[in-house]
Each structure stands twice: as structure tokens, then as C-alpha cells.
Length: 356
Ligand code: NAD
Image (spheres, rainbow, N blue to C red):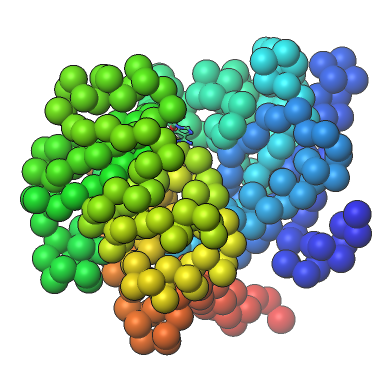
């Protein structure tokens, strides 16, 4: 792998490797861009098949965090860590502490958080070795589970989309198809129910489906049938890549707005949605509530403030739609444009005040 070539192509700042013989820790931290502030991004633990695969994942995820933080209006940069290993088999307290020590050596240039394979209980352990860890579940300054805030942000984003498409942000009587009734999806369904939407759900877990039917009286469809539910809003809250060549042709919605990360299989799918007249709320803008919640711990967690900031997702989606309309861009490109513009402005200001 041509690492420096890759780093220069996308403007990465640092790629750091940590190895600890005693615990077997093999971790990589990628820092993409710190123009707006220190890099914040989760730590993923996964049994990568090769070191190259782990490096590529760290780099790709770190870059995504730069865009997400910038678009959310946070003064944070983009970074991500990966630990090579199977969380079921290889994760233990000593390894997490060794990772915490590694993060601490970076002096706050990188702030870690939970991601796939690393939960908030692991962050508590990492936090015993470094203050540069957020997403704590308990204790003073802990933000707790970010999912309800993520769901709230999704609802605010949906409101902005409804105003654009229907001229009115009300969910009353609107049909919404929710894919994935997990931590975020369930909370989204609760909001939709309270606002009088007509709700269809699906999940691969029948237990979750049954719980939502019991509590909200929603209708359910099998997982593969969610794409062709005739609805106003398709709300993906499960896995990535669900907007692809196969599913696009089945969609019967006017808006796609949900919490799942990396919803578009590729950029061409984003272009195809424009051709079909479907408004897409870019995932990393509408699902930024979780990031906003954990980042709030850096200033001494305040739930009202985190909620207020997550409410700003409404304005962020409005800005994306306006930019897309003005420039004739598809929304996913308008989102990148806005994120890059904010970084470029900050960089210009920094340059102006740099010592000569
Ligand atoms: P979760 O694991 O709690 O829930 C996901 C749900 O989707 C589960 O109930 C699972 O059974 C279901 N599911 C998986 N594959 C499915 C399929 N093919 N069809 C239907 N259902 C399926 O996860 P979560 O925390 O609710 O996150 C949901 C999505 O939102 C993920 O993509 C996550 O990365 C993203 N996200 C979450 C947060 C957060 O605060 N939790 C923040 C930002 C983004």
C-alpha cells in the first residue's frame, strides 16, 4: 500500500501505529484534518484480515469524521482509531488500558469514543488512562447513550425535508417506513408515533418488531419489502449501503432521511435519487446528533445544550437543500461542499493570523 500517496491524495495529517507486547494491542490512529479543532472519532475493534485493510478503514473513517464535525458546526477535526482483533475474543481490560495510554500520548490531538466493537463500558476503562475519551455512560460529565439525541436530530432533519417537499413540516398523516428498530430506530418510531405519522417498520429481529407493534400499533413488513412500501419518507436506521442499484428501483418514497451511516452504495446512487425526484438527507448531516452528544462532554456535559445543538440539524439540512438547489448539486455533494467550505474558511483565517 502506498501510504504517503494515499495521505497526500486526501490531505491526511497523521497515521500512527501502536503496539504493546504485553497485551497484544495493535492499534492505528488516523488523523485526517484538525483545522477546526482536535480530531474526534470512535475507536473500532474488528478482526481485520490484513494490516492494509485496517489502515484503509482507519483512513476512510477519519476523513468521514472531518466532514461530519464540520457540517455539524463543531470545532473538531476528523480522526478515527482501529484496534486489530476480535472484540469477543481479544478484548480485555488490560488491552483497553494500553489503548488509553496510547491515546494519552497524543496529548489531545485525537479524542476517542465508541464505535463498532467498542461500547461505552469500554470507554469507561479507556478513560481511566486518558481524559481524551468521550461517550461515557455514567458518572459526572457523562452524556449517556447518544441514540435518543441521534433520533431527535433525525426527526428535526425530516421536518426540514418535509418543508421542502410538501411546504409543511408536519408529520401528521405522513407515511414513514423505518428500517431497523434498534437503539435509534425505536426512538425515531416513538417520535413519529407522538406526531401522528402512519408508520411501517421492519427489522431482522422479530423481538424488536413485536415490541414496536405492542407499544405503538405500527404495521410491519418483512426486511426485503421495506423498500417498496408506498410512503412519504423512507427512514434507514439499520445498516449502510441500502441505497443501491437494486433497491433504488423499488423505492416509492419522496424523501430518504434516516440515521444509518453510509446509506448510499456510491455517489452514482445519490445522482440517481435526484433523477427520480427523491430528496436525500445526507446521512452524516442528519445523524450527527450522536457526535454532538459525545462532543458535548468536552465542555462538561449539558443535556439541554446537546439537544439544542442537535436541533440545529434542521438548519444544517435546510442549508444543504438550499445549496443543492442553488448550485444544481445533488444533496450528498452539497453536503461535502458545505463541510469543505467551512474548513477552507477556518484555514484562511488561521493563515491570516499565523506568525510570519
Ligand atoms: P442498533 O444495532 O441498536 O440497531 C440496528 C437495528 O437494525 C437492529 O435492531 C438490527 O436488528 C436491525 N437490522 C440490522 N440489519 C437489518 C436489515 N438488513 N434489515 C432490517 N433491520 C436490520 O444500532 P443503532 O445504534 O440504532 O444505529 C443504527 C444506525 O444508525 C447504524 O447505521 C449506526 O451506525 C447509525 N448511527 C447510530 C448512532 C447512535 O447514536 N446510535 C449515531 C449515528 C449513526
